[in-house]
Amino acid sequence: MPKLLFSRIRLYEFKDLMPNMKQPRRFDIVLNCRRRKKDIQCVSVQKCNDEMYSSKLSCQTDHELHLEKLLKDKKYLAAFHSFLQSEFSEENIEFWLACEEFRLTTSPEDLQWRAEEIYREFIQPTACREINVDQRVREKIKQALEKPNLSCFDEAQKHVYLLMERDSCPRFLHSDAYLSLKRKSRTLWYL
Image (cartoon, rainbow, N blue to C red; front, top):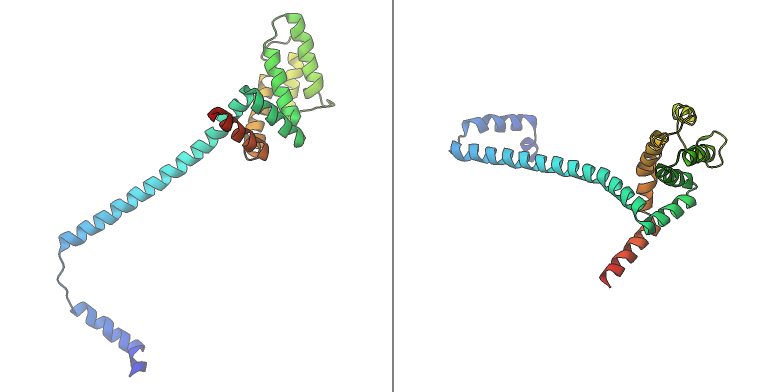
């Protein structure tokens, strides 16, 4: 008998008996149950999508805000600079700072020699601290050196800023140097 219980014939007979058996059902309860499940599924999917979007958004803006804060605060800037030195990419922050200083230049004579100095130190292909910008930007800056203005390094500065924002800053934010500095600044705030 146990062998017949699991045989195909026996299963088909059992399936055939099922439709003949009718259980009383209330359709309003079944429909409400289905609606509630769909509503719960829709809400949970929407919540998951919102959380994913907000986490991506906060991640993107988090590094932007942190890099801005790093560049404005002297302690964090010094720590970020030493971190970049340890990674052999300090030319990025130094170029960015040189460009910021260049923008504050008022006299045309100072503008000329400072622009040439920045070009020789960071942009020129044989520069000792050459930054990573493409050839088109180099040529554009080289042409602008004939009659420099305050915005001649803007495109290269923006490129370096984005490079630091995407590459160096996230690594720095997870480094021991940043975390210990952040911990120290919190404890000093409480004292």
